[in-house]
Image (cartoon, rainbow, N blue to C red; front, top):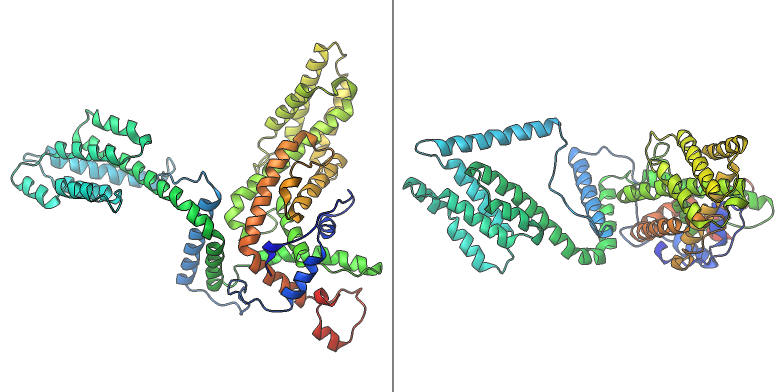
Length: 523
């Protein structure tokens, strides 16, 4: 079932509809046609069959293989979807045990090198090892066609020749270091020119100079990797869907339970729709959920998904950071909008139509709620601070325009109403969250959501820009996720719908008919 070829038609919905009902109203008959065709036959694609074999004990090699595949999948996905992705030289946390051990080992190495070079006569074994490593690093930076420079580096940094020079006491370590810096200057990215300049002007001893050379070489390695990534990204993007799907299939082959959380996630959405089905059948209506409806409701759930209560679906793991970012910013935007609605409904006329004041209040509230993504964030405490700042700003604005300032009683009322949005059953909070759900539902169910991004529901005008930006990010995540994992979702939905028991309110059917027909295709 090619879920990425969805063709639903969107219609407006009332405020009283649930998210799944709105998805239902936005889904056309093609959904049912597709479900009939796809859910009555096994898919032929090798990428759409999660293993249904009994659980087996995994070997350590299989576990490690799956971990490597997941790591490669995550890295590939990050490169494809994040245009600003850059690899940085690995830095260990300060005061960590690993950093202490590494620093001590490195210090011991450089101390040995300094001791050897200060001997009389000097020893050059450590220095030769360093030059050999530098030679290999410099050669690794060259393109296949750079034969002239390759030959020059191999000639100047000829390790056998350097050993002969050491034996004859004719080696010039400082001259070799100067040559290395010159080559680095030719091969480095422009951003490293300042580092090369510092190396050329260095007046430190030869050991300190070599340490700095290796530090800059590490930076150049990262630059080379990032340059390669930037060049390969267009090619990777063209193959991204097929690659990620195949890589996930290989993980699934090694770890049969790799879709358990995804199955539970989709099952919750299917059960929500089946509850509505039972209600509709009791009213004499004939209706069954289509696969697109199930999946759209499941995607909508991700906006408020709480990983502390339910594990994140495996198919969302590569986008976990982006999903958390959208969730946190959406909660903040909703809270800001709720505060502003309360302010303007409570104060009324004296502050109506003042765009600069509205923007100041919005910016102030947003800053004070900026840590909502933090697990230790207390919304109740933050709203107390928001209320105090709001009252001060309102009094200042009213006084400037010769209006009477807020009375203590009105300030207490305003503070109480703002603080009350910390409760989930607050009517203002419920209203805003419902309308945000309507907005995202319409976008998810629409095959061409770009035209709808600016159609902000009533009451959300204050956050229209932020909401459109978040919606664009989320819809992009959903579409890419659906394109990659659509075959897996199709198989899960098909199995869930065919293996479920008929609803209690369903009319009786004979056993032969039940065995031949599924509720999805029998309507």
